[in-house]
Length: 164
Image 1 (cartoon, rainbow, N blue to C red):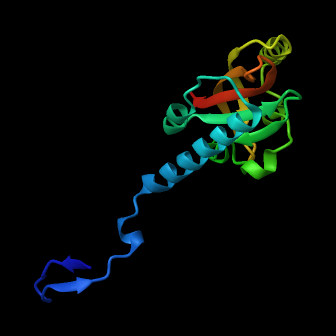
Image 2: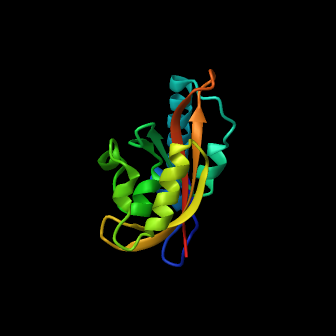
């Protein structure tokens, strides 16, 4: 029970405390981050990834994570992906991230990304992407190859952040 302080027109009284009384806007973010961390850990265990990437730190700092298979098809996104792009995570599973690029995206940058990924190399670039509503945004992207414990390349992870 929560005791309300007395006011001019009322005496001190007890009132039930409901969970929404103490909810804070950051609570939902914490829940999403915890869910995302758990999903990444499950994927890492499933595919036996050999990596030291601190995904928890990235998620807490509002980076968007996108994991693709070797065919560059999205297999998972962090929940922040929807806030960044307007696309629900379920909408993009199986799609290639290139659907976020458009007419004004630098063809030279895209070619560089393709070449580096073909060589299984790390990529760092800034791209003009498009949200679901057609609005453009600049996105810093770092793509890392993910290897399993046997040393075989299995996936790629993109670490993304909107920039000005």
